[in-house]
Amino acid sequence: MAGAITLERILALQAAYIRCIDSNELEAWPDFFADRCLYVVTSAENHKAGYEGGIIYADTKGMLIDRVAALRQANVYEKQSYRHIVGLPNVTKNGGDSAESETPFMVVRIMHDGGSSIFATGVYLDTYRASGDDLKLEKRVAVCDSSRVDTLLALPL
Amino acid sequence: MAGAITLERILALQAAYIRCIDSNELEAWPDFFADRCLYVVTSAENHKAGYEGGIIYADTKGMLIDRVAALRQANVYEKQSYRHIVGLPNVTKNGGDSAESETPFMVVRIMHDGGSSIFATGVYLDTYRASGDDLKLEKRVAVCDSSRVDTLLALPL
Amino acid sequence: MAGAITLERILALQAAYIRCIDSNELEAWPDFFADRCLYVVTSAENHKAGYEGGIIYADTKGMLIDRVAALRQANVYEKQSYRHIVGLPNVTKNGGDSAESETPFMVVRIMHDGGSSIFATGVYLDTYRASGDDLKLEKRVAVCDSSRVDTLLALPL
Image (cartoon, rainbow over all chains, first blue to last red):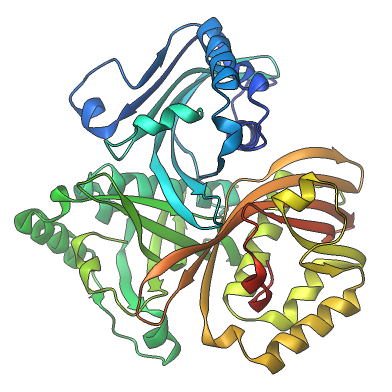
């Protein structure tokens, strides 16, 4: 069945998403999302407390496109270097043309002097929507373990 | 064949195991193991030297359940935050209803001030047992790269 | 079709490659490559600038074998401990008996005092060649995010 959301398709989407950001192809980033989507970056503390908002909150694809434009204008992203590593997705729901998964992530920041440090860790809470061969994120909540995440604004998670 | 241990099933178990711990759902952790099981946390140095014991040694599921109770009573786990990332499992044996794999892992510790550091790295030496659709760990030896792992007692690996 | 390069085969090769190095079974490392192969370690800066050379450059399997011999003679590798974690491969091309992928990696270095730090991060740009059930690397370019990678000479990436 073409529309079934296999683990392989989820792995492929997660890998391609990360590559898009770390290759600095940010303009392609909004296309990982469905037209009707929700993208939130928040902290574990706020998420646990049930706050719906976050450090970043976008509930239309247009807001994601605007965000890339803002990052390009601020020009901060290109001055810094990051590397995302995602772990194995844990598929918590899967039925019909929709699925959910939780995927741990880590972002390493590479300094100008060549040193590296852990920039952020957390978990992606994702909802997928399949339409034929097309798999999109309908919802991504990036829950950061640390509450010190203001500088995260420099790149998408 | 329902009982075949596919890579997909191994990926799913590894992802669910990690999620269980990092979501602080420790009471569900012993269920990843078969009733007759072995769980050991040791250092690379001791493992290489052939010592069978370890920092943690449990050879019944009941000992795992006891361990969770002790962690809850000590209440240490909840005061700290950890993030596991597992790499890709390397399946070294697979036949019938049993399989073995080696999976690298990393644990990041998130401090109260928001900073993060590498808490532990190592490799999971796992033996799986399948019973129908059910896949369990018959044996997990978590070999930590560093010999400085006493504080590991605060959470399962 | 026996020769098809499935995601599962790519995952298996990536996992086995990493295990070979971290288990210090370096003599088996050249066998992950095809007889006609290219292995390059370079920096993101140099790669972006289009420089074909690198910190390490080997265009025959014999050079890889020589490299292992040199590492063994220098005896540096065994004094240090490293742990590779690879993320999910992003398969960018796949057709017939050849495929390409980009796979993020991180290497952690474990110090003698027990502390750990990030040694290197980057991405593997790989070309695979399948011959029946046999899958080999025809080309691996390990692009390191940091330009400070001279000490990388101590182990293969």
